[in-house]
Image (cartoon, rainbow over all chains, first blue to last red):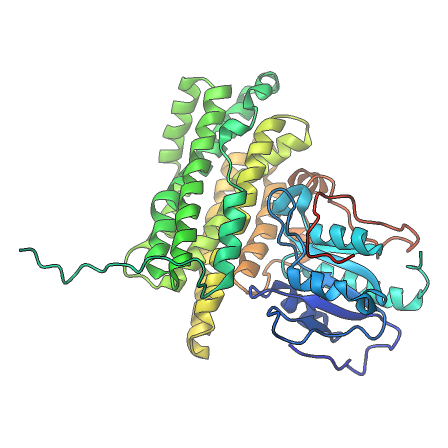
Length: 151
Length: 323
């Protein structure tokens, strides 16, 4: 899914989505169903990194071990190490599995703290219908309140 | 001289030449997460156990014998049956870890029993598990797909349903006790099992997806149909099992919601769409909170927008961060 073109129905002020999804594909399935268009951070370090050119929300799955280490995928860290990308980040959505207890979707916690942006939401695996509705509505609301995330 | 032609000598495994990065990722995750029941101070639950009514004790022991059976199956039959189907040597090695951890899980329930219960109570519950028709039916349904000669991808479907769905009629109860501040150390141990099962279901589901994507469209559809029909079969059994266990304590409907939620997650592990709509799969918040303490509510969107939530501190420094 290399969809970098925004569907015409999506209002211009809604933040764009940039996401990572590993080969298991849960996050990409969520993003496809969301239908807002999105840029994907590639799994392979050999592929070109997308560039954030406007306000965006990052959706990131979690790969933490039992101690919480390694929650954020290396490729996402690489993407965020670019200050030009970070400048446009307005919030993060963490994904994961509640089976991991207190570390559920902890990549969202880590990125929020590291980048000083709000943790907008957490959902499990490929998300359920309720998650789609909430994220869609939430992103539109963010578009209407462009200053709500300013620090 | 013996005929040696039938002996296949495997190639020595080289972990520095990976065909699938997921194998190493999951190997690392599982080995770092390794644990033994001795790590959990179960004896702290003795006073709490004494506060349970007799029927609550019986229910709890029965639930744990049911879980022991599933772990035993996965340890001795399920995970080993997946090994000959492995497409990489590293996958086979990961499955040996899965198999062993299932043995640890099965062993853990006996640690709970020896700490909290009398021998007589436990023996009675094991006898119950051997005679319970619903428990035996789900074991049989899974074992049929594990039988030698069956489709390797169907085996993976059954395995994911065991790891990500069938355990949850049992896991519900320690989460329920934990939400009432009872048997909290036992719940800590069960959470370790729940964490492992998530990795197992994820990994086997991932391997299923890799195998399925190589098939022509019609065969993919047939496998998908098989998965949903097996889920329905297991779901029917689970409903009856749940009613038999939980009617007396009045929790049957709550457990069924938990089953729907976990069935949806099992399907997603296989790359399929969730089946049960939100109305019947919204789990009791107290159970969700017991499952993932401190993380039950992360919805910045639904608030006013002014509640500025920064992620809580987690011990997660990674050397790759440049800032």
